[in-house]
Image 1 (cartoon, helix red, strand yellow):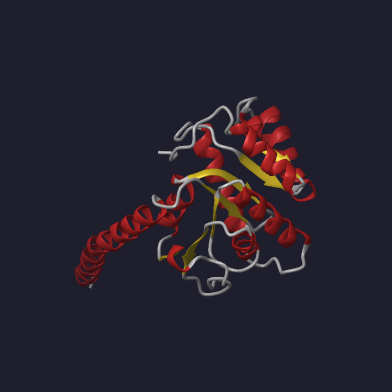
Image 2 (cartoon, rainbow, N blue to C red):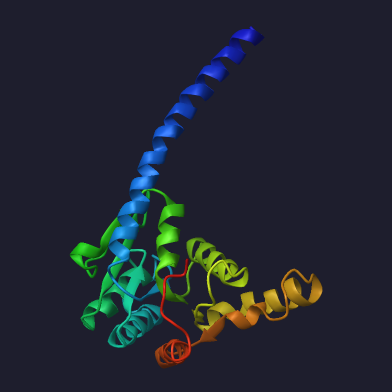
Length: 232
C-alpha cells in the first residue's frame, strides 16, 4: 500500500513538472509582449492604489488630479488597469491627452479593465510577478495612493528595489498623510529604532505628500538633476 501511494505521488509530481516546463513559454510570452509595448511608450509614472475606491472619494479625485498634472508634464501613466484608484489614474491621463497604460490581470473578483486606457496600451497578464516587473522597469516614479494588501505588496517591493539599489534611486511617493502615517511611525520606532532592521536613511528614500502639486513638483525637481532611463 505504501509503495503504491508513493508511485501515485511520483506520477502526479512528474505530470505537474511537465506542465511547469510548458508554463515557461507562457511566462516568456508575457515578458516579451510587455517589454515590446512599454519600451515604445517613453517615460512613465506608475500609480498604485485600491481597486475599491469609488468615484467621488477624495483619494479617487486626488488621483485623477495627480495623473492629469503628471501627464501635462509629459509622463505616461501606468496603472493596474482595473477600477478604483487604477481607473482614476488612467482617467487623469486621458483627460490630459497623455499616454494611458493599463497592466491588467485576471482575478476572481474586483478586476476588470477600465475605459480610460489607450486601446493599444492595455496589456493583460496571468502572472503577478511578470506584471510587477512591467510596473517597475520603465517607471520613472511611483505614486502610492491608499490601498490594501496588493498596494502594500507593491509599495514594499518598490521600496526594497530602491533600498538595495537593484535600480537607481527613483521617486517613491506615498499620498495621504492620514492613511500612511501610522505605518511610517511603526517603521521608524519599531523597524529602525527598536529592532535596527532598516538603516537610518532608508525612510528618507520615501516622501509623503497630500497634494497633487507636491507630488508633481517633487518629481519635476528630481529630474532636473537625474536622467530619465529604464530602471534595469
